Image (cartoon, rainbow, N blue to C red; front, top):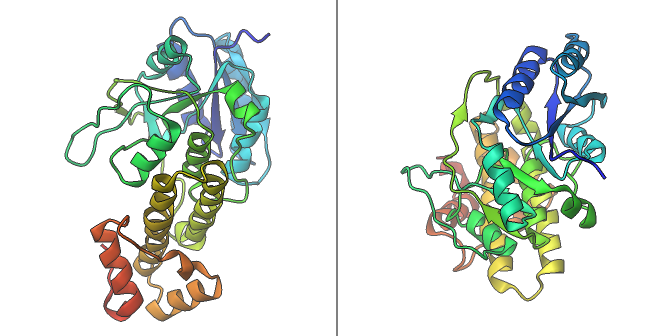
Length: 315
């Protein structure tokens, strides 16, 4: 049986200095936990593979570097999951790193025998939602959809056996929104949830540019919608009688993601007519439905886009 407590999976491409810094920093801050560092290199050309291997060896750490080729980040993360041997797994992005939370998460997972651990993050007004014990994965999913719970998808841990048993993986073809879809899929499989009261604090010591440039986001934003459609299908399969959950997906989450795509394309200079034609051709416009379960702000956006698109402007 593996003696690794937590597998830390780090996707990397031409960011050797930042990846090395992350490994050093995390290994210094983690106490009484045995980690392994699994770096998934995606066709880097900066010599990062050797340097990363050296820092793992020189610091007597468990870990490896796997070259996954030129596929998607989602594919790289799946490779990391396949290789992981820890009791728990987490995913770390140098561009969105948080300070000293893994010890607290690990302790929460062990104390409550949890499959999934997270910490609610602050809302725009600085408030934090208090979550009661015994909350279900479906409850969390509805909370996320309705924004009554705010979670950073890059600061969570999972019990590895739970992911294996439920066959939960990233959608490899998805280049935008893959982490979001992964979290929702996990929640729909009814994990035992634990939440940490720790206040997550961003660590900006090695911030990098965003994972996607604006142009890339424009070209791939509908991949996020397609991923959410798959998640909704899973919700209908696993929670057929949960009308609250299903209505939240159908009348809030899907139209919200569809309008996100509209806003993204408009902000990049695409014409209203071109976007509407694309959405009709791809049948994405079917997800612009609304009901009493749709928030007033989103309902207004959808109605304006569907009836007076030429005056609609993203907010």
